[in-house]
Amino acid sequence: MTTPSARYDDPRDRRAERGTSRRTRVLRAAPALALVLLALAGPLLAPHPIDRPLVAPYATPDAAAVLGGDLLGRDVLSRFLAGGGPLVLNALAIAALVTAAAALLGVLAALRPGLGRWVERAADLAILVPAVLGIMLVALAWQDGGRLAIAAAATVLGVPYATRVVAAAAAPIAVSGYIETAAASGERLWYLIVREVLPNLRATLLALFGLRFVEAVYVVSVAAFLQLGPQPPTADWALMIRENSPGIMLNPLAVAIPALAVGVLALSVNLAADALMPKTGTTTEVSL
Image (tube, rainbow, N blue to C red; front, side, top):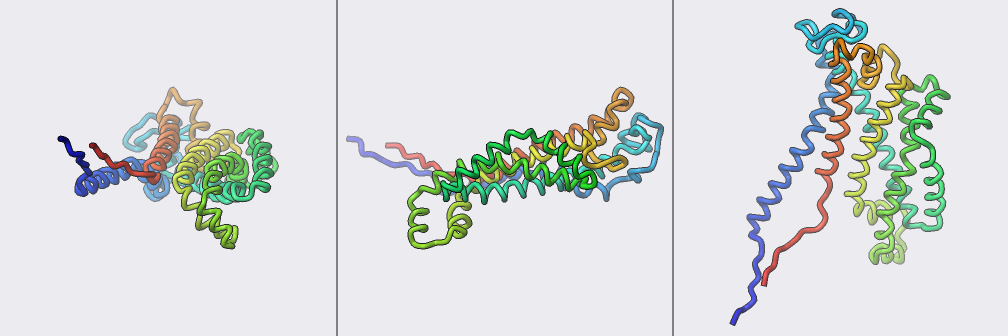
């Protein structure tokens, strides 16, 4: 006769697994954190003034300029170190504003279906406007806006799509039993949004923040490449790519280093958001 037996995970194994998972998540988030810190602290690390010619135009790397010179003979390394901070700060601000606005509008649309239909219709119309075209119109109309104009346009154009994502994720939560119970007991709408629904959307919002950051890096970089935001002689990664592209055969590092930094920044932040995303549910192995 065989009696059923249950085998449960050893608590020590679970603790070790959680520790390993935590270390893995930290390691996956480390490149993004390191690159963001480098971009923010870069101006303090620049070895030379960013606006002073140091070598010949498009000079190859040497002892005076480790990454060579740009189109005016300025130190590429110094301009690279000074050009990442504004891009990172702009992208972080845009991603945070878009995520916050989308969270409130999306949850509101899920809790109030009548209002939600109008929100979705407005979002559908706004999504039809290409982001780059909208930013070009705003930047050309607000010529003195600079980075602020680009950030404002990118935020406004990014909210509609993000709102649709949050509304779709919040819809099943809005009709769940505990939300209906809280509403029936007289809880105010603000309480339902902040205390009941948003805490259950942490994974969605964190993933959305990572995606919006990548989109913001793309939009801000494209705007700078088109000279709609920062203007020469400002140090900016995207502007460096545009300025130095005619001399890419003479000093390819002047273009390759900022281009690589933009790509790695977008990828590493997306991976970090995925690594920091809260895990839903746990599994327990039981065998009979």
